[in-house]
Image (cartoon, rainbow, N blue to C red; front, side, top):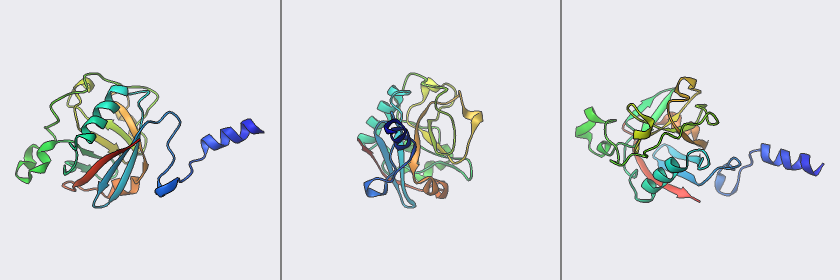
Length: 178
């Protein structure tokens, strides 16, 4: 009976203080994205993508993402952010081509993490090891992305907010909750 109760406790997602969702077993720090449309919370997977998670968390702690605009928003598919050029509306034609200048350096692609609704992955223009700062959130299952991009997290709260994001919407603040 005690074992069954333990298993059920792991399987049930229970709201915690502050309206957040409980993270999955093995999940790491939670990324909090504050947008004009609402808050998006992302659990991270440092066991599967340790260098990717550490890289993104370091950028967040430096304030890199604060004030960036979402440069890609395809309704029903994906939203994307992480190009510093998006701070300048006159450079809109080149949005999506810039990054932090320092790549993760490794492609941490795993079969364990798939591109289901709310998957958070590192964007790249050719090689996953060259991913630097751009990441995306899938709004639906996207199995064609599996095996090509490192999934380092999943939305645990605010997928409805992510679905409302449009190109040029600003990320007010990104923070990390340990």
